Image (cartoon, rainbow, N blue to C red; front, side, top):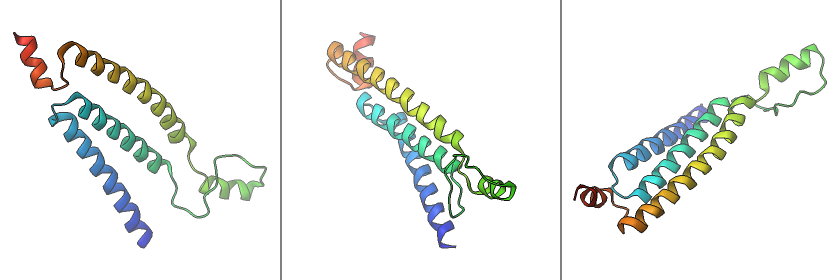
Length: 128
């Protein structure tokens, strides 16, 4: 009972972080703040993917196949953690880091050209 309550609190906080980061991406005028919100969004989505692949059964077995009998193999399959979300998340982390570096480089170049990272001021300069 308490475990389910705590898991629901964790999931609600992850969804809350996703919603706050979406707000930051949509409503903040600074490109740096948008990049920070995008990073929070990707990290929250990665944590949510790991949570989906996690099993709420104790004891949790790592996804390494030991030499077991038929009965032991059935028990292992019931308690093993799914390795696919973990593999997808590590790939997403590496790709996300590369994308964040590319966006940060673009923000630095925009700051060098326009002298600001505020998209409203940049739009005014472009319209002139």
